Amino acid sequence: MKNTFGQSLQVTIFGESHGPYIGAVLDGLAPGLDINEDFISSQLELRRPSGAISTARVEKDEYIIASGAFNGKTTGTPLSILIPNSNTRSGDYDKAGRVARPGHADYTASCKYHGFEDYRGGGHFSGRITAAIVAAGAICIDALKKKGIDIGTHINQLSGISDISFDEYSKGNTDDITKAINILNGKKFAVLNDDAASKMEQAILDAAKDADSVGGVLETAITGIPSGVGEPWFDSVESVLSHILFSVPGIKGVEFGAGFDMVNKRGSEFNDSLRNENGKVVTSTNNNGGINGGITNGMPILIRCAVKPTPSIYKKQQSINLNTLENADIEIEGRHDPAIIHRARVVVDSVCAIAVYDMLSSRFGTDYFSDPD
Image (cartoon, rainbow, N blue to C red; front, side, top):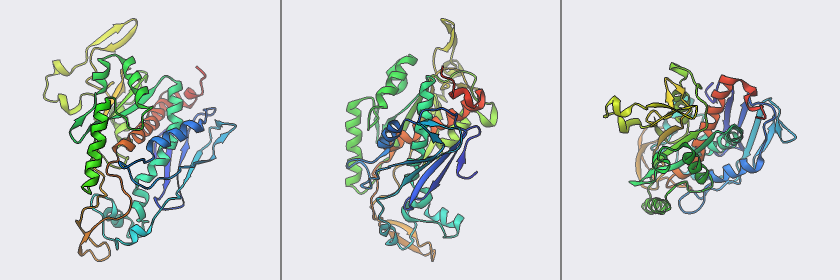
């Protein structure tokens, strides 16, 4: 299932950057879920480029729900979403003469598909495909929220500039993490500290002026997920989330909880003490990021993702001609992002929602989300 993710809920993506459509099919959604078209549009807006810190290619993303919905509700049969591509400039890629773009999948795609792939704009490997993922994820995010589960992501680091972490913001209070999520989900540039936001945006503009790009670290929190979800070993919560997160273009690292920051500490410092507070089991710290033995413990799931600098830069670079394998230089043309991290945050929210929806359906059954309670 090369383009399909999931067990109980399966999501299949299709399309190319400069093809007529991109899209997604969700198979396994509960019947009776609300199709909130305004929310889907607002999620797509968070991903859409705007201003000098993003690409000049702006698509309207006027999506079509072609099946699986009736009278504003899911039917339970496969739901398909189509998003037309209308603002393409394919000629920008013909000029490259099939010279592989460094950092992209041009060379590896040519090896796999023997040169028959649609290479325009990265084809099926393009970040453009994530618009379909965001539309699909919006349905899952809305369903999860109705079950008291919230997901939010912010730019934790960019060019040496740091935002307030979820732990710093909440000081261990789960309700405050949920408040932070709600604040972030209302922002186009998702940062908790406004001073850090302006410095980050300037760093992106500085890179763009230098014909270059920047990356950074995204931090995600998932609150309200019940304890006991997930499987040991190969379908652990970390395994499932990492699987789908590493499918997002540009993600080069994933860590949970304290992650690499705590590996040099002793067990007495890393372990999360268990306590009973008003009949609910909680941990005094959350170094394990809400997961033990691959299974949720009821605390917030905390994830950090490393996002690489955008590979499309305007500096001259060394490469090869894919037709002759001779050495060649390339100066990339076209419209590209000096940073993708601020747009990727909603993609990360979306894939996490798809994975959590799938795990909850596997644990409690498809109709878990049909329950009005």
